[in-house]
Length: 179
Image (cartoon, rainbow, N blue to C red; front, top):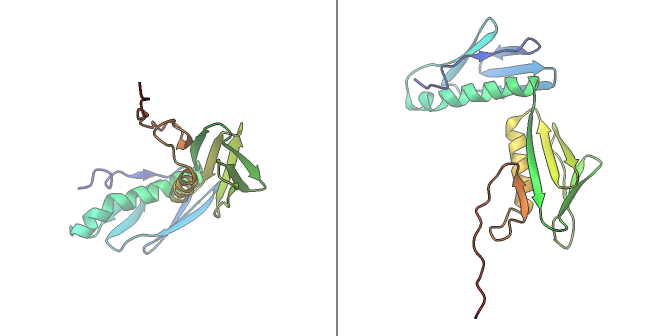
C-alpha cells in the first residue's frame, strides 16, 4: 500500500470540495482549482477529510495512488494558502523589474527578456535581485519558476545567473595561468 496514498487529506474550514465522478473541484479563499483524476483511483469525502482509494491492485492503480493523493492535497493547500517560489539573481548588472504584470530581466543579453505570467501567477520583485513567483497551482508556479531560471542558469565558475533561493551551485576551479 502506498504510504503517501493512504494518508487522509484534511480540509480547512473555508475550503469546499465537490466530487463529480473523477472530477475534483476545490474552492477556497484564494480561488478554485479542478482536476480530472485517473480512472484507477477514487476520492471519498468523510466529514472534513478526503481519502484517496484505488479501485484494484493493478500496477497502474498502485502507481497513480500516491500521485493522485498528492495532487488533491496540493489543490487544497493552493486554494487555502497558495504557493510561492523565490529566485535570486547574482551577477554584476543582472537585475529584474516589473513592467505592469510582466517581468523584465536584464541578464547581460543584447536585449531585456520579458516574461508574461500565465493565468493565476503573480510576480513580485524585491531590491532588483529577488523574484517571487506566487499562485494557487503548484505545478504552474514551478514551471514558471523553471522558465525564469532557464533565461540564465547559474554557471559553475563564478556562480552568476538565476538560481532558486537556497540552491547550492557546485563551483569549479578555473584555468591556472602559465608560470
